[in-house]
Image 1 (tube, rainbow, N blue to C red):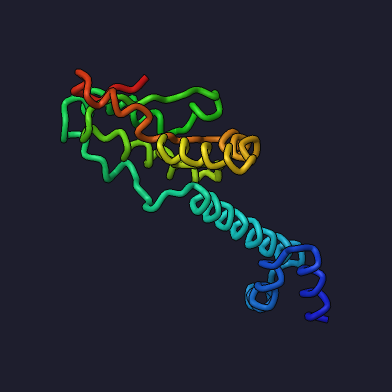
Image 2: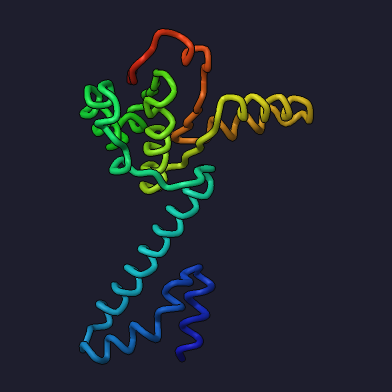
Length: 185
């Protein structure tokens, strides 16, 4: 009977229920759980594992190479970081994504633009949000290549399908201007 139930779970694509059925049934016997509690526990396991898999997939698709978090950001490093701290921390709630607002970080090298962008992107992946981190030059190169092999529409749809598109090094010319601090617009 166990194998038949496991096969049915698999046919319904409930692989985590199938994998955990024997252990949950053993727990239920030890703790005297009701059938409804057993079903609830199996579904909790399935939901937890699917959420973890979605988060792992979002991180992999994001093209981030590391997992930066805001606690690694040194707000004391530069005066402009201190002035923008509350604003930066508020952006980590990712409400700007839901509101479909753009965030632009402007400043000289070393002010933390790339790191903060990666923090926002990583936070988004951990919330299951479809995210892509790229540089402007890489995006342009991919679009030029797509134009050459006649897949431009597909590549544009790929960029537009992201819930959060982080485009780093958008304008190197700004780095050579008079911006000596981090500005968030």
